[in-house]
Every structure is written in C-alpha cells, then in structure tokens.
Image (cartoon, rainbow, N blue to C red):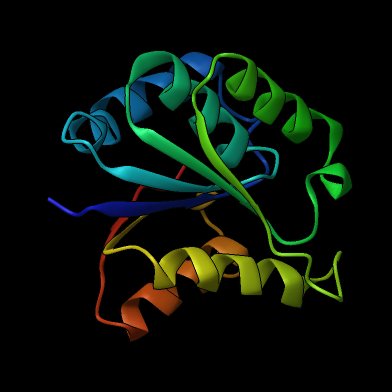
Length: 154
C-alpha cells in the first residue's frame, strides 16, 4: 500500500447527487484510508471539498490540505470544508504554498505537482467527457513520474 495518496478532481460536481460521490469514495478511497495512508487534498471546491469532508467523517486517515496561495484566498465553500475538518480535529496539516501568481492556472498546477511529488499514488476524478484541465494535468504529472494512477470519471 502507498504511504501517501493525492486526490485530484473536477470542481464541477453539481451534475451528480452527493450520494453518488459518497458511494464512489466508500468504494475507492476507503481501502486506502483503512491502511493508514496520508491523503493530500487540494483546498478547492468540488471533489477536493467533497472528498475531504467524506474522509474526515468516515475514516481515520491523515488529512493534509494544500492550497496554491492561502486558505483565505480559496472559495467560501472550500474554506468552510476545511473549517469543518479542522473543528473535528481531523486536519493533520494545512499547507499554504503562497504562490506569487495565485490565483492562476500555474499556481494550481504548482500545487498539484507539489502533492504528486510527495505521493506514491494518485486518484483522479475528472469530469466525464473532459480531456483537459487540472485533473488531467495532475494525472499526467504522476504518469511522467511513473506513479500509479486510478482514474474514476464522474
């Protein structure tokens, strides 16, 4: 089992009910969480926030949130998810990369590379039918490093 896993995914999640995401996480994240893995999760909306909240509620895994700038610069719903996990005492670490160009695509790519570089495995939840964007960039970065990837289109 890997010691650290990066979760990456679409910010656009309104096209499916919450229960479907919870079922996906139970099936595909729980086996890793049960083995004591550290999860690196970006502090954005969508899959980042949904998986963070699910992992905090349903597992004992170590949870690390990584943001490209500062937490204050993240969207409201993402900040609220981090606050909930923090209040539960489940946030192992918050890493604010304080990228000089945040917000920008490069700042998010920098954050994603940072997480992948510290992981052995990447689980990606790209938007079904998409061929580009940050999720695919992150999966590609893991591939170039020869790291294992699990891709679950949503």
